[in-house]
Image 1: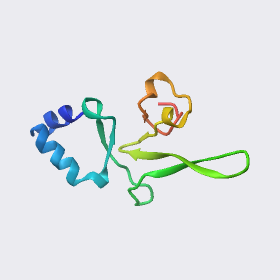
Image 2 (image 1 turned 120 degrees about the vertical axis):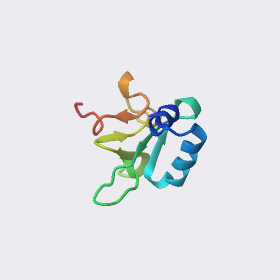
Image 3 (image 1 turned 90 degrees about the vertical axis):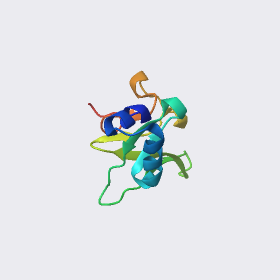
Length: 105
């Protein structure tokens, strides 16, 4: 959700909401900048609430970190495929997915 929408739902001002989000930064996923920023709660995987590194392997077998997968409540995920050079449909160009990547919604 956007900060304006979250503030309205929580009945707080946007500055108060942003302070609340900063205090809980370890549990919050933020995608986008300024007016296009969207926020979601991180979802734990086996009790751990951390981003999951995604690696690519080149033709020589060398692995490189390609991006970071964020699991979000309740069943979604965030991974910016475009910044990794992968194709993503227009509906996923911002990196938000209803489930896991390329999974049916």
